[in-house]
Image (cartoon, rainbow, N blue to C red):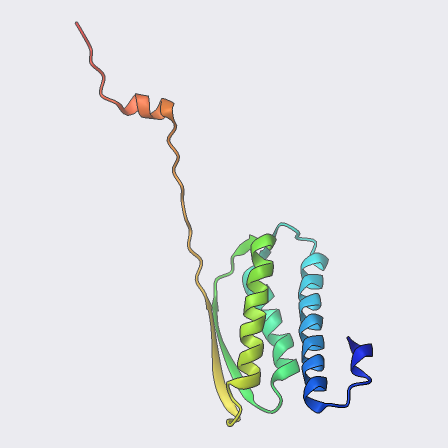
Length: 138
């Protein structure tokens, strides 16, 4: 992308290409952190989101003083869940930093992730038979 951007004269197109470069860069950094951690099955979601917020704030906070209120539990979740969730959170934080405070020098971004625990109870046929009333003949 960087090579393609060198011949662009239109400022809006150049800005769009540079924006795409940043997004690809930050998502590659996100993936790199996951794989360098050596934890390829589960990772702490709070740690990952905190690092993402720091990186994105450095890239996009251009003079505004965005304050973050982060409410995320220290929970390890599967990487296969974390990657798409990270993409969504990355996009939300990026857009908030870029557009939410255009005419302000301060603002607050609240990041909350609530995890639901679902318990599935399976009772197989054998279990069902044990719970049925028995007809005993004496």
